[in-house]
Image (cartoon, rainbow, N blue to C red; front, side, top):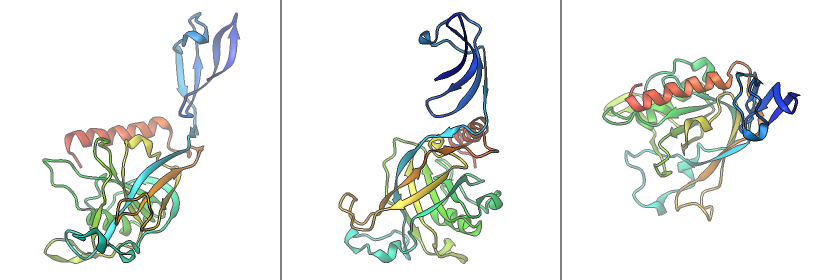
Length: 249
């Protein structure tokens, strides 16, 4: 959507609004009408573009004191979801992205919902969910979204064990106290800096698989926060993709 000046019916200078709400200052030199979709000769992103409203399906993490989780879905009770509650806060990504060590950006994570990537993928050893959540809680996160960015994967029930974070080592130990969920989504659908809500249906909800608590990450329409332009956000997401392809941390 273009708003600006025209000369003899041809676009010249103005503001171009993308479908995702991102704003650009643009100029056109070619004598091509808008209905022929001309490419701007110059295009500069403007600050604070709009983040469009969205919703992502998630599955809440089940927590108990076993290594494998319940073998019978009929044995899953509300106590295994006692850490779950609805929460609203700004969104941030963990550094390092797989959460395998104390977060480098702990100050930024404090008081926010933190996204931690699932993995790393083979041939590297995957980081247990317990380690990711332990480091998130130590950093002061109010919620954790574990992100599986391979959208070919099905949404599954994540299991976390309370107790020693590392097998065979009694300390440190984890007691999950904040909501944790798994989402299968492209990384760019999780807008850094946006205020989002984690919301969950009760256990036994008729449309949920037995024993699972499903929910949503809701993203209301809002202005992107100053300090994280779409360009910077894209660069950050590209780093995640490169590490994901290479198995880096």
